Every structure is written in structure tokens, then in C-alpha cells.
Image (cartoon, rainbow, N blue to C red):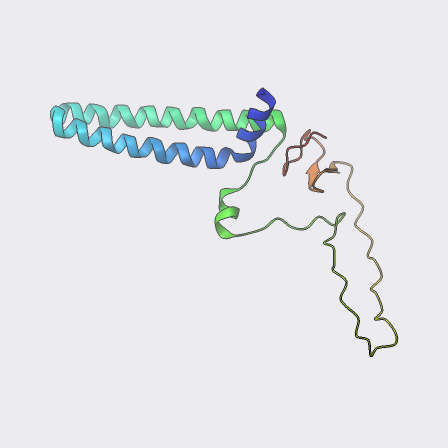
Length: 151
């Protein structure tokens, strides 16, 4: 159970942090408006600085927790920037994309030549490939950074 939570936090930590930051910031603004409106200027200033201090501590603690879970599990996480830009992960050379055979034209008598298979580059000693999804992982990780399967 704890291992599953660690893997989830490590993999989706950036998204968790972004969601928590948005949630906390919205309620900070609501508290600030309420303090100035109903409590006067003194209470509003107290809420302003107290809320900023609490928010900084909250975000530092959340970032530390995400960092620790990533160290424990070895999962690097899903990048928020890559997801927003529509970038995809590069194809693993050990597991090339499968090509669908095309239907042959009945007029042709000889089949089209097939390209010779290219040799995959020899992996370094500090990498391993996931047996479940084929993702290349660094040697010091003990879980796949893509699917979370143990080494």
C-alpha cells in the first residue's frame, strides 16, 4: 500500500504540486479578501503575511515529500511541461515500433525488398529496460519510470 502511494506521488508529483498550489492560492485570496472586508486593515495585513509564510512552508514541505518519494522509488515523474507541449517520449531502440505489413499488389510478381534490420546500440552498463513496457531506465532505479513495475 505504502509502496503504491510512493510510486503515485513520485510519478505524478508535479501534477499534485500544481493542483495543491492552485487550491491553496485560491483559498489564500478568499481568506485575504474576507480579512480586509470584515476584520479591518490590521487583520488583513496579519492574514496577508501569515498566509504567505504558511504557503511557502506548505510548498517547501510538499516539494520535499515529492523529492523523497522520487529518491525512494527511483521514478522521475511525468513532466508537466512535456504534457502541456504535447511532447511524446522517444521510442526505445530495443523495442522498435512495429510496422503493419501492406497488402501486396496482385500485378507485382516479386515482393518488395525488406530493409535489413538495424542493430540497436549496445546499452551502457548503467541502464536497464522494463520487461513490461520497454522503457529505458537508469541503472540506479529499482522501478520503471514509465509504468512503475519493479526491476
